[in-house]
Image (tube, rainbow, N blue to C red):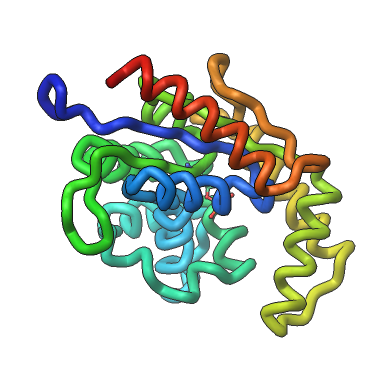
Length: 226
Ligand code: C5P
């Protein structure tokens, strides 16, 4: 972290895919003028590099070699949003040495966050699976956003159809379950809420209500820090 007084305010937003954590994290960053890092893109960038090179994402040697080459400049590629890339990401994410490689990038950015125009930001929102537990265990605010797997699959299915992609609900649901199992079951940095995280279940809560709950918590903590 940076020197006393200059330490950025850190908000960790974790949770499974399609629970609404990305929307919440992005909104919080805009609201507070903070930087935003979608850490899943780092894992996706590794997975994509392997798929594009015809390599197996579950091959630890190839995955680690790919991870060493990833930089923040790789995160804008539209291909990273593909479903096959998401599956590949969750395979490389189970390899401890890949996680170690990407940890440094995440912590460096969290210590000196910058806005898209390059200006330093007073704080940062990171979204992922292990931000509150491993990447930034000292985060000022930790939020874990979840929802039932059926609801998340329904949202993802709708999103795919809106993007004009071919999608079958039962397949989307199975892919979601497979990814959940890999993310929760891995030995290193499994997806679990931090003990001190605010858990928001978005199954029955709309995005505005989730945002309001998060803002209340952040304002309370910022009041205590400032
Ligand atoms: O969040 P997103 O769906 O883009 O993440 C893709 C995959 O990357 C996840 O399924 C997970 O396996 C991995 N990931 C992770 N730790 C993070 C962020 C993402 O293991 N902090």
